[in-house]
Each structure stands twice: as C-alpha cells, then as structure tokens.
Image (cartoon, rainbow, N blue to C red; front, side):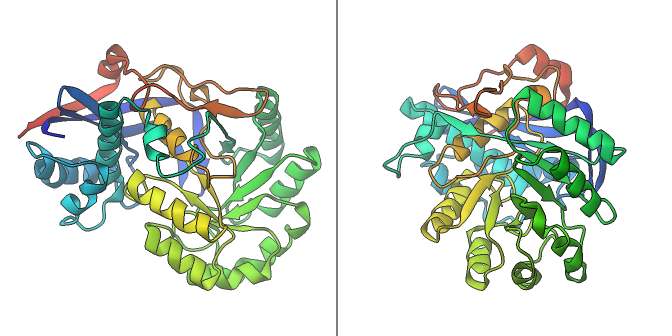
Length: 374
C-alpha cells in the first residue's frame, strides 16, 4: 500500500456516567484518531491514551507528540507491504504502544479493505475455524458511592442483558463489596479488577474471597509486575488474570514460564496493536491459557477492531467490549447494540472495520486536526 496522507484528530466525548477506578474518576473521554489514506482507501485507527497518565504513561498529549513528530513522518509517503511490516518501520521509537497501535489498526483496516475482507476475517485467516460472528461480552462497573448502589447498578446491567460483571476494587473497597455482590447474584459470573492497587502482603484480602467462586481477580499487584503475581497465584483459589503487566508476546511468555497467572487480558492497544495481540493469542492458545479482550472506553472505531480480535478462536472468556450506550449517548459511528438473549455483540462483517464514520459528529467533537503528506 502506498501511503499518501495521514490525518490526526484529537477528539473529546462525555461519558454517560462517571467511570471510577483506583486511579480516580473519569467523566470526559479524550482520544486520538488516525486516518491513513492509501491507494484510494482510508483506514482508521484509535489511540486510547487519555488525559492522565494513570493506566499508562502515555497521554493524548504525549501520543500527539510521538505520532506527529516521529511515527507519522516515518510512514507518510512510504510504501508498506502490510500490517506485519509496520512494527519494524516504527521500531526506532522505543515504547509508546498506544500511539503505535492506532497506526497498526488503521493499516489492518486498509489491508482488509484492499482484499474485500472484514477486519475479523483477515485477522483470522491463519485459523481453520475462521472468526466468530458474535462474541460474548460483559460490562465493567466503576467504583460506586456505596455497596448498595453497586448492587443496584449490577442489577440494572443484568436486566439489560449482560451476562458477566466486572467490579473495580481498591484497598478498603474489596471483600465486603464482593460478598454483597455474590449474595445478591449467587450464579452470576463476577470478576474483580484491582488495577494494580494492592501488594503481595495483601494476600489475606484475596484469600478472604476464595469461597465466592469469582470468575477471576485481575491485576491485583504492580502494573509492571510478573514475579510477585507468580508468588500470589498459589496462595489463592480465585483464577489470577494479568492485564497491565503484559506489553508484548515476550511478557506473555515470561508469565507462562513462571506460572504468574491463569488468564491474560489482551488489550491490543497496550501491546502496540493487533499484530502483536495475535502473537499473544497464538502463544497462549498453544499453552491452553485462557484469554479475553479488554476495553479502554473506545469509540466505535476502536470497538469494531476489538470485536475483530475477540472473534479469534483462542478468546474464550467474555470481553470488556460493552455496547455503545454503556459509554456514549452519540458516538462517531453507528452504535453497537447488545444481543440481550446471549450477552453478545455482533462482529462487523463489512470490508475493513465495517463501520462508517459520522463525519458531522466527528467534526462536533474534534478539538484539533492536522494532516501529514509524504
């Protein structure tokens, strides 16, 4: 593909309700979009960095800088064989996976459009099974003002059709919350996400929840840690999931080698894109490691690509890819709607991402735009 121009957008959208984690509350969601124009086609990608360096050291500000000053100039005007050729072209920039993932997604979108395939079909080409048409999803519930309010919110999402619930926890907001949720919903798949808020010395807190039959405990310890998780794992009965610690297929390999987890949450943006995410999928599938796709409050551009990844055969657990109305009243694409009968979202099957940009809405939410020609 011959890359003629790349457009970079900084957009902002208000969430339908505040999303509160151990990092703090989020009401406004900023992100960056890239549009790569090549061979008469346009591929779209989303950079999920936000305003604050909480989940990641990257922010919209740093990502704009790295994309506009380094990554995009390295691609604009160049010829690229396909998605697998992108990473070597960007290797001169160390780190910054969220910025790189936006370009990776857009190149996959272009490659799929060029072949007349959906993003999911092209990504799944190596596998005999092909992509799923629908994928199981759950919903992530931020920290609420009270346990009672949390139970009410769970009930509302269950009534809406969600079949798996994730609760955010932090020190002091953990055991009692989990017990109340389990008492109210005895058979509901429930998982807890600590976003690295605890230490190994807090193992007794997790042991106190061993009898609750939780689906998993996600990233309780340090955001770069693998080793201490391997020490925690034999101390608890709840399956242990890694998220922030896994930045590449190599990190997944390290986790497998020392028995650091039972499950891995693959966020394609966290691992610099779908090319590396598929490598992690292949590695973990061969090792019989359970996988699911995490979310970062994406627009429809990112959500379509998440669904394509989650449609691969190795992703066997429900992902955090909730319907659009969980986050936005009006998005920049047509909304994704929950299939209430089985808690699934339908994977787009049109060429590329399979979603159309609402350019009027995109203009309304754009704070800054810049174009880069070769």
